[in-house]
Amino acid sequence: MKIGEIVKVLSGIRDEASMGRFLEEILTPAEIHDLSLRWELMKRLKKNMPQRRIAQELGISLCKITRGAKIIHDPRSVTNRILSKP
Image 1: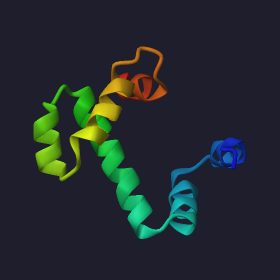
Image 2: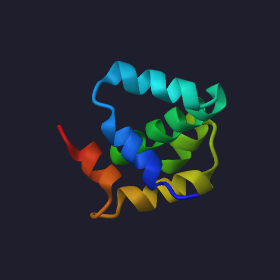
Image 3: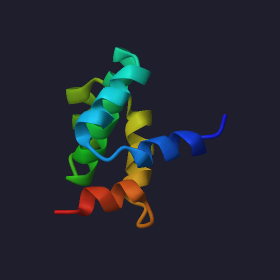
Image 4: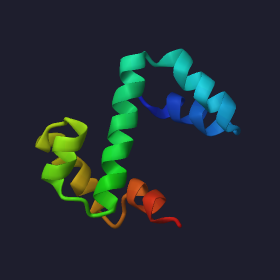
């Protein structure tokens, strides 16, 4: 399966309420939780919070945190660019 069609659909949603509803319609509560947890992880990494502290506070593995750290430290990363905005 390619992600292109999903990207097009998400790109076409222009307001937050519709985006929230769409995500709640297509994702399970567990998937929404995982996505929210991943975003919180990325925000904490961007703030230079220690990885072990993140693991302890969020209850996630260091493996997931290491993957996130690679993304945050990549200057070409879209996630890094988004989190760098004031």
